Length: 115
Image (cartoon, rainbow, N blue to C red; front, side, top):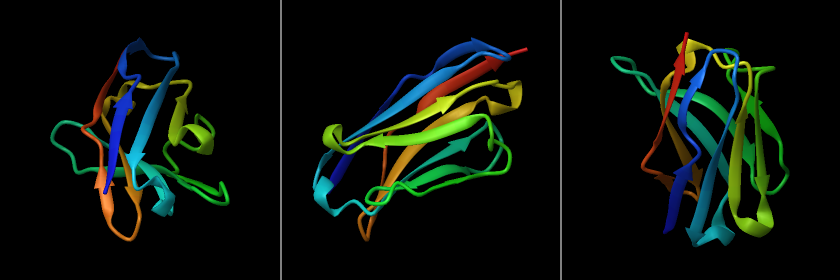
C-alpha cells in the first residue's frame, strides 16, 4: 500500500498562487504515475494533472494548462502542484492520487480562490 498526505491548500485571492504538496509513504518503489484531481461543490471529480514517476512526463487538463505546473521530487517521494494565476473557478478540494497497479488517494486539501 501507499499512503498519501496532501498539504498546502488555503484561501487566496484571484490572481494569486499556491503550492500543493503530496507526500507518499509505504510501497513507493511501485509507483507508476501520480496525479491531481479536484472536486468542486456539486460537481464531479475532474482530472487536473499527472506526472510519470520514472520519466517525469506531464499531462494537464486544458483548464489549467499554462497556469499550473506539476513536479516531483523522487528522493522525497513528494509530488507538487504549483498553481499560479488562480481563478475563482479553481476553488475545489484537491486530491492527489498514485497508481501502483492499484489506485490510492489522499484525504484532499481545500483550495478557495476569492474574487
